[in-house]
Amino acid sequence: MAGSDKRDISLDTIVVASKDQVSSDLAGETVLLSLTSARYYGLSGVGARIWDLLREPVRASVICESIAVEFEVAPDRCEADTLQFLQELAKNGLIETRVDP
Image (cartoon, rainbow, N blue to C red):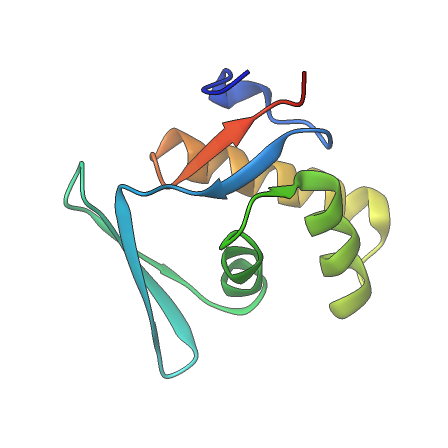
């Protein structure tokens, strides 16, 4: 079901960068521009890596697994922080969410 409730992102939710944004890497920081709100966002470190993983549709659980391994974070902590970050991106219209039927 496309366009699921953005507040309900779970590990099973498929997420992808919205088409209503543009992004660029500037000296190791990712800069995003929302085309709908004309607001800029800056991401670095873990946030920039998550954004990189969002270039193609991906299940939130895969992002959590990648981040936990790459940044040596406890899985529970990583899940909570990653899902919260994805919810913020969705709230700002920077990602789209999908749920498998």
